[in-house]
Length: 201
Image (tube, rainbow, N blue to C red; front, side):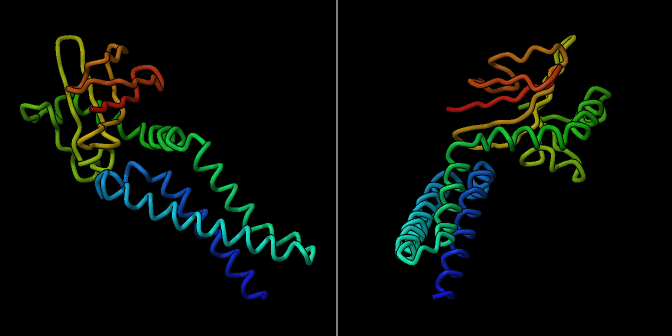
């Protein structure tokens, strides 16, 4: 019976971790696997999580007669993981971490753009980043738009058919609804000259 308890506890830890990780990495998964494949992955994860939750509840009910309250630990772990994945603003945490961790490097890229060191763009305004800086934008490309007295540099955090998202540097500190070649339904100011934007079909 002790072995069974370890199995239930271990399963709860694993499935709780998988659920939270899937929520944190959701957009990266969409970028790599595509929206249809990620939908299938979501169904599999939630089905496995539901099975683990039923097992944890059954185990607790079975041990309740023996007054072994620690048997509730697997169910509590899964309930906590569910609350975090469902209620916590995970996308906001990930977005803020991405922005703060990479801000200095992105500012260096902006300085290179403004100095003309990254001036080779195609007709779409795309600039291929050097290999050492390619991690700053999904696909290793940034979008650059220059007009008199205004420079906009967009770093992609996600690039997909249904949605594009990322961080924009805007030299005049005004990020418009239609900017960087996208129609942004969601725009959030992060600090002076820097914004987060999402463009959906």
